[in-house]
Length: 377
Image 1 (cartoon, rainbow, N blue to C red):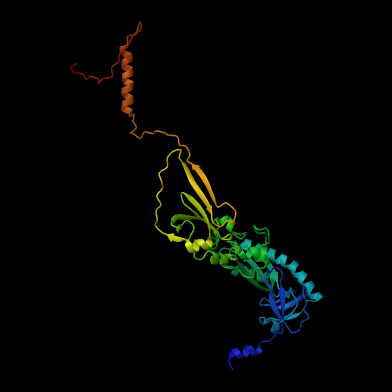
Image 2: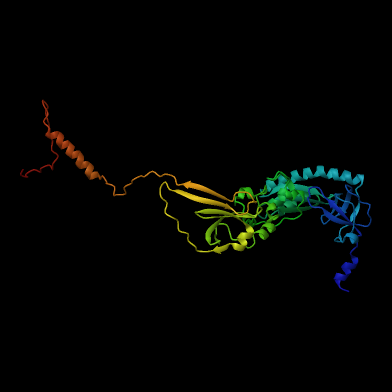
């Protein structure tokens, strides 16, 4: 007999499944029971991987064989007694003191971690500290100090921003409680391509939740948008439709409507027509017609998917704005050098000297080279 068979024989088959939710946890867990005496809103003591814990039953017991449920591996030990409730309340008060002690030790050791919660097991043999940190933290010295002061097993668990948002809770942009703290049991992988598939503006501030990551709700409609836009050209691409070249400028997947536009017309067609009649064109250059000043340009708006009796063609006269003519010269700018300025000043000074002044004594000074002794004039 192999080891696997021995484990299967030792495993206990529980005929009933009990759904239990713990405080601070959005996800319920299933536990096994030998009888169906556990009803909704009952408080029970269960055995978990962390140890003995107390939680609240979320629904009446379910028959495992009747509903084909997954066989739980951990049992419900008993219904919570008055002693269990008293111990649970005492643990809440002791957790506050343990949280303060751990926070003080973190500050003394100057560790880069943000403590979020502290939680005792029901029998107080173990305490769990949950913290937030960007990188891995060396908390070996912290474990020694906490073990010496709390005298029980210590577990430190690092979580990310999304787990913090689930623990803290809050309201999203939709006005409802965050999905992660309300009903989500695990986090999906969210990428920016999901926003592109839904034709959303790539504004990170609007696409991010309170955790700073991309919103979980982007995942909900991603499969539907992929199915509805399958086989369609991308927005901004050129499409040949009924012999004319257009540019796909807009697409409304919910209304199943697309907008094709060129210089002369803008056509609103269904996505079915675009998929069947539209031919994607690459490298096609549409030449623009020369625009004349003051000339009216006629543009026709065609709605092919409007109900019967509604107008389908609308003509618009688009007049080009009048532009003021401005003549600019781009010749070489005359540069005024310092020598030119000096010559101008000399000319002005010479002109003043040539003008005779009445009843004024004029003194002329020369600043030539001084003659040396013995040198002829």
